[in-house]
Amino acid sequence: MLKVKGPAVVAGLAALVVALGGALYIAQRSTALLGARHPLPPSAVRAISTPEATATGAHLTVATACVGCHGADLSGQMIGVSGSKVSAPNLTIVSKRLSDAELDRAIRHGLKPDGRSELAMPSRAYAGFNDDEVGAIIGYLRSLPPKGGVAIQPPPGLMLRANLALGVFKPVADTLAGAKPPLDAGPAYASGRHLARVACGQCHGSDLGGGGGLPGPDLTVRGYYDPALFKTLLRTGQSPDGRDMALMASTARTSFSHFSDDEIAALYAYLDARDRVLAAAPRP
Image (tube, rainbow, N blue to C red; front, side, top):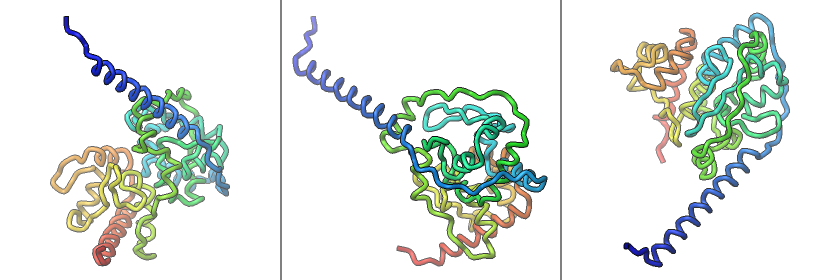
């Protein structure tokens, strides 16, 4: 019979203790982060329900990818967040239950009504919305007839909890303090800069610089895209050599293909100007 030596037993027990300690730390740390309350900032936003504002809100919910998480009809769906499944709420119902200020805080600050952080709201990008844009979005959402039901939020999965505890993934509200706006290339490019922040900042970072685990790289266009190729990219998600660019292709089909020609032109002009400013800056 094979005998298990004493040191092996001790090593096994030590490994078990370490594993249990790690599991306890993950559970306690992630629970603390998920339950942390943040101050509720004041909000002056009011829903705007004029036909013009409703049309603007409808455009923004598509062009800035609200439909990507909440579904094409905004009635909610399950999405993946840091290795776990999370329910993106049914906005056709939730928008009528929450106040203007509560919806504004969810959109631009990533906060639930009780001050806890949202997990998946791209508020680092949406923080760039102005009051009228948020008011138009709320007005549009409230104009939609309720559809479907409200899904029960599943408990956070082990992978999500582990990533929270280890700092690999952070609650939305905890990411806003260090978020930097895109480079200011001057007043002539203000509209393109604004659009880049709220629409592209979700994947490329609030400063459009990429990195830090973001799915998108630095938003460089010079040397890669001319205006025509850039328009094709946003309409189809295809690279200059005709390849579908995975996430970009999906985003283009659901959201960016709804940009107007003028919006695409303004976005390209800003990104081109941004590239020129960065190229001329002294390198550290």
